[in-house]
Image (cartoon, rainbow, N blue to C red; front, side, top):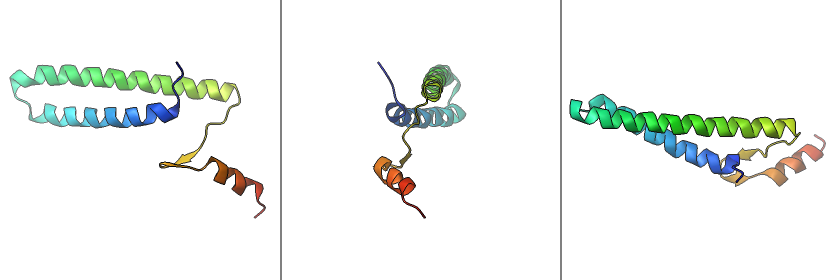
Length: 90
């Protein structure tokens, strides 16, 4: 089961949004709500850390194998366009 930056990146964004939301809830929570919010926040932070570790490991393995990751700009796939630009003399 190989995870690439393509699958991890959107998951990280959603998780970061969840962490932000939980932080906001923690600021306004009443005492009886705070335990559950902090438990959820701790879990989300743990998931985020694990995903970052996976992403870092994937990048290290790719670098050791000499594989250059594809560069992307937003949602548009530019691999062919970037290759064309590199081949053209300027």
